[in-house]
Length: 380
Ligand SMILES: Cc1cc2nc3c(=O)[nH]c(=O)nc-3n(C[C@H](O)[C@H](O)[C@H](O)COP(=O)(O)OP(=O)(O)OC[C@H]3O[C@@H](n4cnc5c(N)ncnc54)[C@H](O)[C@@H]3O)c2cc1C
Image (cartoon, rainbow, N blue to C red; front, top):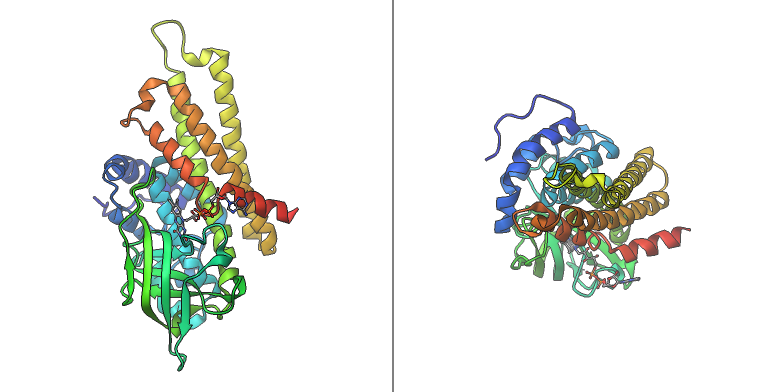
């Protein structure tokens, strides 16, 4: 299934386009139908260098800016949202170590992560701590000799659960509230770490999501990323980048739906001209294309802000705006695209109904759109 040769280009967006049109477009339906994770395809993207794009080349990353990386995500999402989301999740899983690890930790682990041989996952949410991570209950108790932490708790809705080679476990090692949170990089082989049955989701079914249970799981203390108590700071940086990733995926999804709707509306019909000749439909499509363009502009602008290295709070607000607007746009565009496509798009053989199901999830993950509004309002 995986191509042995990559398209002849060093340009990541061109590479993404070619892989999206070949590998992704041809396999999406069967994997979504079977709710099967396309590990080989994700591995192929890793070999092509697409799983470490925004990280330093000295550790095996692509050394590209965030704007380029988000453009790649957008392109992948036009063909297969779950795979684009996998890239987003894996790239995020490298962030704590890349940005907050010590040189020694980076030398030990980062290379195999950025190359994609090791697949990552992020365990932040819990059943009672989704929007409010200060309520996190999963505990990490330090051994008296300081050699390790023992983890107990359950992390809900973990993407890549059961497929990942390592998990960033966010847990409470100190006092109540966000200042008591830390993050440990736990190998999937950690004794006491188990993954549950994948959730039967309405969309992105080929991306496994499950609970990760920690039952006396021991993780060596040298696997703590950043100092104890830095977990919230690290989670904030991860959310900013994750929200931009989700926003880029949303733009890709909306673009796919819009393109299908426009091409269907332009088809000649036996009775009269194409449907797009009627102003009612033409204006609907004009509005959708304006929204997609605006969403893309917000995402790119936020990416450039991140790339410019300005202070974190500015990035946080811009990432929240981009996530809010782009995912609401994807919901609207996928819904209205079905209207423009008519009855035949309601069947499961047409991707339009899948796109609608997927868009709904984008309004929830990486912080719901209500939470994005809370973040934006606080920044005003
Ligand atoms: C497909 C999928 C993949 C996921 N992958 C991961 C993953 O890899 N790792 C991970 O850690 N998590 C993951 N999640 C979890 C996701 O991040 C959470 O679902 C999300 O943060 C919302 O939390 P919740 O579902 O517990 O909702 P809740 O926090 O229970 O919220 C319920 C409702 O209340 C609203 N609400 C809550 N607080 C406020 C407030 N202060 N103001 C206004 N409204 C509020 C919310 O907007 C929502 O409408 C995933 C979820 C899904 C669906």
